[in-house]
Amino acid sequence: MKIVIINSGSSSIKYQLIDMPLNEVICSGMIDRIGLETSNLSYVTNTTKLEETLPIPNHKIGLEKIAKLLMDETVGVIKSTNEIEAVGHRVVHGGSAFSNTVVINTEVKDKIKQLFDLAPLHNPANLEGINVAEEIFKNAQQVAVFDTAFHQSIPVVAHKFALPNYLLTENKIRVYGFHGTSHKYVSEKAIAHLDKNSNIITIHLGNGCSMTAIKDGKSIDHTLGFGPMNGLIMGTRSGDVDQSVIFYLVNSLGYSLEAVNTMLQKQSGMLGLTGYSDLRDIELNAENGNVDCQLALAMNAYRIKKYIGSYSAALNGLDAIVFTAGIGENSSYIRKLVCTDMDYFGIKLDESKNEIRSKEIREISTTDSKTKILVVPTNEEIEIANQVFELLKN
Image 1 (cartoon, helix red, strand yellow):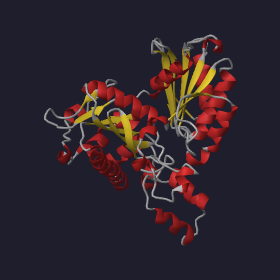
Image 2 (cartoon, rainbow, N blue to C red):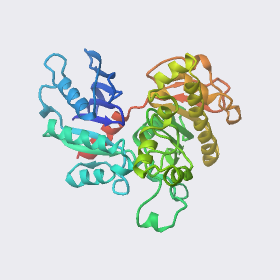
Image 3 (cartoon, rainbow, N blue to C red):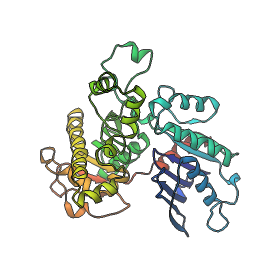
């Protein structure tokens, strides 16, 4: 079964064409920096590797570009869209409506749209991917895999807010958790590497960031909550902020609620602190002496350290921390900031190992580090493909 996987992030699209159940990747690539003049596109097959910098203003144009490459007469890997039996879509927020992988129909799309307000940077992009894919792959079954599903195991003591009870029972306001496909994938890889069920903290760092406390393979707590905005400092999202700041902005400074929402979602985080949303730009400027960038990186790492401490308590022990996603896998700078002065938690970084780049799972802790420090490349697309295949194989 040939399955196209479309993973539309807030500013990126990752895609793979996978032959299942072999888990054979026929084609892969991504587009990042969507919305900028310097968007990067990659397209990789067994015989071709293309890289291009071009303006891609939105997800629709990006997805259309990907589809043309897949069917290109020279570098394409399929002759007809009829070869594709299924398209698997990562959808960020499933709310209380979805706890499992589902075949997409009009009702599913309507519910995804109803959740736009809870994931305004993601669910619209996810739905756009679905609509474009329906136009391109007309005979394929469209399937949604939800980021929130892995976190359904979070116990009520952790997923319930200290709000009036009816807001949970009637309005389903609770911690849902996100990046579930990534946290599930890398935690399973880490457990296999450690060869035991363990207390693990997975640290997913990209334009969106989150951490999960995982006990024996199950999510028990997570930094993102009702929507994907709190917790860690992200590319454009603030992460944790004192709620009273919101009331002060509205009541005393005259901001509208819409303006505050836009600020917290799209103008804060690393962008608000530095003027840049891409960590590569921030690190480069920090190395060149930009004080704002240096402080923002220190704040970013400090927030991660705080959650390592709290989740170590929630787990009652810590066997490993796992760095993953674009920043987690590639930024030795951030990993070093996070792991410095963490001896109390048994975290000791081997700086030479930290500088090694690899697409394989690797340990970057010292030999005497009580807590393992792992870098596990995520592959949300393979995880999505596995779930799509399991749903459709019968």
